[in-house]
Image (cartoon, rainbow, N blue to C red; front, side, top):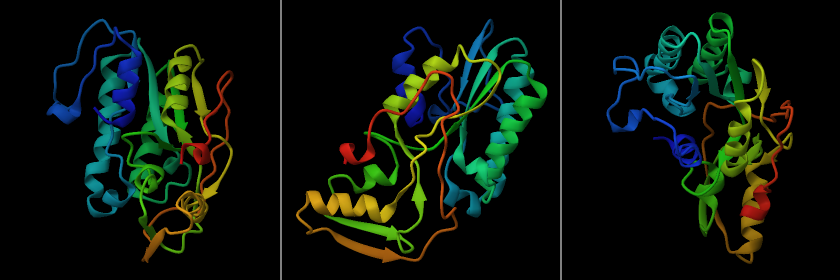
Amino acid sequence: MGFIGSCLYKALPNATGIDIREGMNLLTCELPQNINLIYHLAAQSSVESSWCDPLHDLDNIRITARLVHAYPNAKIIYANSCAAMDKSSPYGFSKWASGEYLKQFHANCVNCIFPNIYGEGSRSVVDIFKGKDEITIFGDGTHTRDYVHINDIIDGLLKAKDWPKGDYYMGSGKSTSVLELASKLAGKLASNLKIRFVPKRKEAAEVTVPNTTPNWEAKISVFDYL
């Protein structure tokens, strides 16, 4: 399973999971029956890869459509992305379209819009930087993201099963630049951090995700984690 799915699966001991990383194709595999709650976390999830193979991202929409058709009476909790907020990449557009498809054609869906998620085992820049004495920054480092720890996200997903149908932004409402992360890391390393700057990637310059949930909030500080 992916990073979020693996962590959530541990928090749901009675859950049945379909692991697309073990060769299970959600477009063709046999789906389990008598399911009343679905956490839909499956997706091609790289903004950068979506520019190289945008057709792959269309599977994000197709997988969602298959689940909507197969489980009309189940509650579907969808792991959406802040990349869907501006739809500036094929990946972001596919996540936005998947969320819209759910809202249009399924009666009981919760659309969770995630910020950048970090924590041990993640591919977040936070975990790429952590513990390193030499890092690479794409662009000038002024682009910002909203970072929320995986433990907070799992807490929100567990609460989401009781939320009514709708969109729920699950951010901290705080924006942190890559340079700020590097500065914190440099402080821990007594300023011996080596930074290599390379050309910027095709990605949003600024991302801040609010918190619109009824009973959840991000509690872990990214700076404390670093």
